[in-house]
Length: 463
Ligand code: ACM
Ligand code: ZN
Image (cartoon, rainbow, N blue to C red; front, side, top):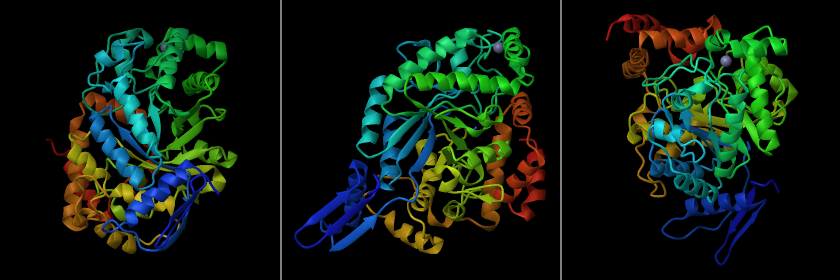
């Protein structure tokens, strides 16, 4: 039996569970509890196993710090939906959220954080619910919180502050200086000891090369290595990090931009989120190495329901451009992500997550899916007192239409736009270098044709 598979049979005098592993037993017990009505379970026989092995949610606790109890609440909820991965985005330009005994300036400079005790407790909480925690320390970009504490790790060594808004910031780790790798080696050792899992996410997204280009150390490394393009230096950086992981028997996960500069990161996994640099992602899928699907147009739950509605999530079919992909292409599963630049409180977080998380959970587990049937069942299921006190989005907003949809989508786009200084906006646009394909997909996935004029007019209006 597959390690996550289980069989559950209930008759008038016996409940019997057979499972491929402890994980399967957790799912059998979860099903049993879900079938219970007034303390009894009707006679039944269930034979069940998941469609994908990686069924995840990524949550950003760096941009907005969520209390340990809220983190547990989310983990509890995804485990009830039989999801098995909680990817914990713990560091970014806006904050450092891990107590570090080796480098305490990280958490004391980086604002609110989880103590090591809290982290261990959350990991244990997740483990007994069958959820793997993949902590992410993003690098070489998104590191203002590292550099605010240890400015010598950047190319310029200049003091930087934590970011106050979203955006892509040019200050990144120096890739040419061996001291960077010595520091990261020490840091990762501490992280490897703190978290019990085998997989750790090391980011690799959105790393502008401006500072590397002006750095004597990085430029010398370029020459020594015979590189002609500063992107290759990110490949070098990623390889050095991957060596640290391999030496410690751990598996690294990288965002898909990393493939721009390096095609073979032995033993690593890739998380696909952006169609930019899709060529390299397609080549990677050809090799059938492991990867996870997190397309931002379908599975980024920080976008409101007016841009990514429940039906769209439920009908997600993993694809790279026109090419449909599946397990035969190395695909392990899918993961939704929720980024917290624009999330101010727990209620909003829960609103954005639920019920979209259930839509994803269901298509990750089962193959025969019908949206209408799912929606009707969902409306009943969320009334169950198995769920905690969750701030669900109400049914009329699951798949909003008409003017209400337009208003919400525009308000969101406007708040993203208005939230950034002109300088940050310029850096962000330059770093993402949105091409025509990206623009077209953005419009067609998030908007409808009649929205375009209103959208343009709204964006140009001063706040
Ligand atoms: C990402 O959204 N920058 C991974
Ligand atoms: Zn440098």
